[in-house]
Length: 89
Image (cartoon, rainbow, N blue to C red):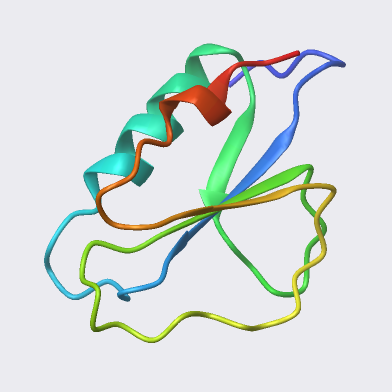
């Protein structure tokens, strides 16, 4: 993949865990950022990120309160829209 100098490192956190149910919000965000040329990967606690997206499908899943290295963290709550947060400034 070609990364431009403006490419950002994006981390994804599936708060529910990878339990066999795909998190469609994270999949869509991943596709959007990849189309912009950004590097998208599952969050790794040892790496810094420009932006981290956290999303969960089930309301009964506990929130992830882990300290994360990022310029910006966006959390999605079930029943709310996250697409407005995807606009690059």
